[in-house]
Length: 242
Image (cartoon, rainbow, N blue to C red; front, side, top):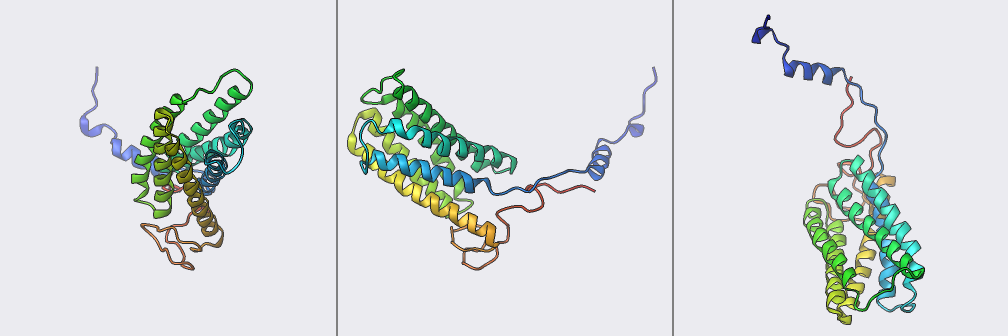
C-alpha cells in the first residue's frame, strides 16, 4: 500500500479557503423581528394585565381573552422569535420564543377551561410555577439586554418583576401580589409599545426618532444610526462571496 507523504497531502486550510472564496450565498432582506414581537407582546400583555388589575371584566372574562392572547402574544411573538433566529439575534430568539410559547400555552389553557375540560383551581398554584420559571429566564434576558439598549432592558426588567409578583401571588394565594404584578406588566406593555414604535420609526426614517438608550449608537433624535435596524441587502453577520 502506498502512502501519500504529509507534505503532498492537500491542505485543510487551503481547501477551506478555496470553497470560501468560490462560494456564492443568496440572502434575503431581513426586517427587525423584534418590532413585530414587541408589538404582539405589548398588545397581549396590556389587554390581559388590565383585566387582572381589575380595570374591566370579571372572573369569567379570561375565557374571552384567550384567542387574542394566543394569536398576538403567542403566534405573532413566537414567529418573531424564529425570524430573530434567522437574523442571528440570540436575545430576541430566546425572549420572543419563550414568551410566545407561554402565550400559546396560556391561550390553550383557558380554551380548555372555557369548554369545560378543565376547572380553574383557587389558588392557581400551577400557573404560579409557570410564572416562576418565566421570571427566572426573563431576569437572565434583562441582564443580556443591558448590552444592547436601555429600552429593551426596561421591557424585560419590568416583565421579569411582574412575572415574579404573579408567581408569588398565585403560589401563596396573596391577592395584593397578583395585583402588583398586573400593574407592573401594564407598565412593561407600555414600555414595549414605545420601544417597538421607536424601532419601527428608525427602520422607516433611517434615523433616530425616539431614543431607546442604545449602548452602541446614537440616541439623539435626528441622528443616523451607525448600524441599521433593518438590513436591506442581507442578513447581519454574513458576507456575500464572489
